[in-house]
Length: 201
Length: 305
Image 1 (spheres, rainbow over the protein chains, first blue to last red):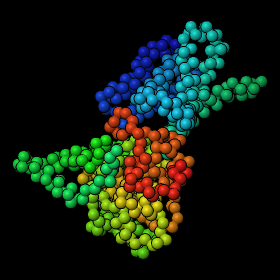
Image 2 (image 1 turned 60 degrees about the horizontal axis):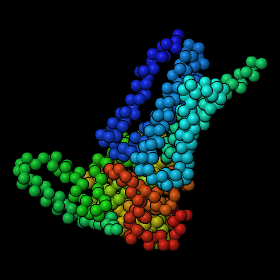
Image 3 (image 1 turned 120 degrees about the vertical axis):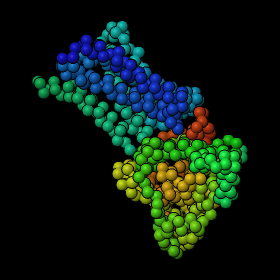
Image 4 (image 1 turned 180 degrees about the horizontal axis):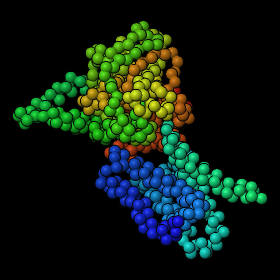
């Protein structure tokens, strides 16, 4: 039904759509239209967008099991790279705008505050994913090793949602929804990999 | 460093000054004086800045009324401003009970006729590591306590926020075990810095800031300064407080602003003053050390945070 061509055609539009919020927020930040506490707001928006995109990449893998839209998987790389883009902006807002490159303070913050620890590890795990995202790298590493590296997306998603969960003070509904989605997507994979083959035997 | 948080102007002087400003405007503009002039005066920070030292500039009316933590109206900072329109702070009465000679339910109007309303320009430091400078109008809590005549056995004061889920949409969700509760030790409650605020920037207290009457304890994290108070109870034991009940490892009963006591979620060493780009150092007791440090001489503040 939806061919590779269809998905390929949607790529430029999708690219602009996902890029747009970051441009808008930076513009609003620079023009003083991000509210009373703009640094906090910028950081929160960027972080939330990154988490949502991480979840979308996991969803795409699951959706690609459906025959009619199995080519959707070709969108995964772009969205994954955008997730990394938003994480980088989120992290640099924290380093540069929030703490003005006070590295001693930042290191203490990362060690002492569990939610920042989770977020930071999640960011570190994303680096090998982003840097091995080209076709060339897949060839160079071999698909098996490449795939192994990209299993890192699971700890990335879990840590990122935990980072959000711990940050929220009282109403945990939103982070719980994200964690629930991640859990369902992981359960589906486990079912597909481990349980279904056994049932088939 | 000069710390002027406790600077006090009698409300009369404040009213006179307001009259003077209105007068000068009136003569300049003759008959064209409109309510907008008054409105401008009421949101103009410059008249309050004289009460603070050169390091502290009063935050704008907009900043103070659009960025609030008041979970009764929702958990986002903008929710109290957006969702508090249906709240009716009038008429209002307060129940005073527990260990007092004269338990009573008293109309706010009646309280106001018996107390002295003053300007108090205070720094407010949120536990989330942001801060503001706010020009309150209110009266010392000690005045009300004296009226209630607590028994000598009363060692603590508990405060309770109104519970009206129909007017406060955030209360429909059990994010906190409503109603919100806070408390102070008697000597903290009697401290001259502790006020019940009924106004802000010369306006009646806006709904999102805790209309019609709220506590302001400027040396403690903001969550201690409970809003929309309907009950004040005198007790012989330390009362349960909302945030401490919800997460005791994060929030203590005392909740004194203290840059040296670590918090699992936010560093308390620095803060962002709303309206400023770079963070600033957080001061011990939010800069009110001279006025309140003696209250905690014998207390291990790392244990009793």
